[in-house]
Length: 131
Image (cartoon, rainbow, N blue to C red; front, side):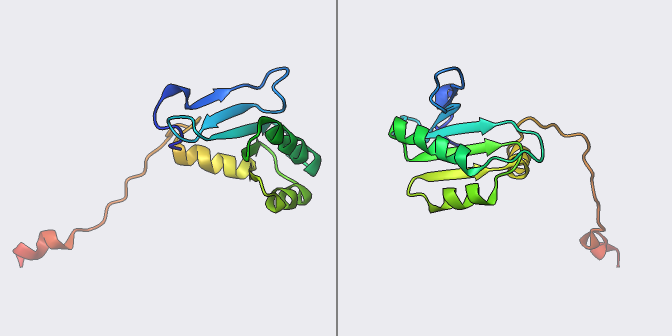
């Protein structure tokens, strides 16, 4: 998506025991002057992310001294979780499974082209010289 320029280390996966509720970090610029922290939850459809999960992520951001975060889930967010994220001074963007899929297709991540359809139309200018 253009974060961190084009260098390899623009994004790093953390997500292990003792990660403080942070699964990854993305350098917003090539120098790493500002960072975006990421939390990811892989939930089954119907098992949404609630406000307590977003509050916990906020606590992790505050612990890192961060003001920007992205919370991604393969499922959905409850209304309370969305309202809470919208009310914060810190910027937490919520990306649900539907939006995640749209972004994956848009940026060609984890997808491949299965079929290309070519549509042709008549070029009327081609026939102008034959009148």
